[in-house]
Length: 225
Image 1 (cartoon, rainbow, N blue to C red):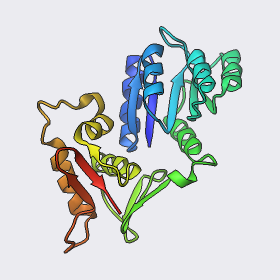
Image 2: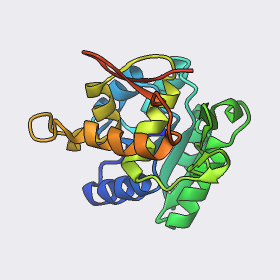
Image 3: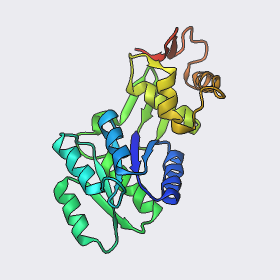
């Protein structure tokens, strides 16, 4: 699952990004409203966590522009505890839920899970290839019904490849979605290959002639039925 986190407080942004990454979500971030709108209209997200108080373009304006453009991505609104008017206006503009600051981590994660389980999303929650199943809600991967112990990066790689099943994904696209701004193509050129190798070793059946993750020469990788 890919989440866009929009928050202008650098400390909170970093804390939430690390927290959600540890939960094996793919995280994009934006620290102001203009950057947020650029990403919303350029990418497809499973969930947007949106602070109301933002520089350049405020959160309510972002929400309004999204819904006017028929972008139906679920939005969890972050509001000041005393801002009843903003919460009401946010729900009127199309927010799916809100959370008042300060909030507990447990409640944030519960709200995220609830929004990702909303009706109409069930078809996206279980991704499969061969005897491998990945549950995007429980964040579990199984092989013939038995749990696999994947690292955060291995899980994110497999999830993104399964979302794009039967379509080749370039190395750069994989890097952008899994490592985000932390990926440096000059110093981490072998990083994807190492992680793909380790992932193949865990998901491929013993003695299998072909890997579930195929290399597409000159492009990247694909999982294909």
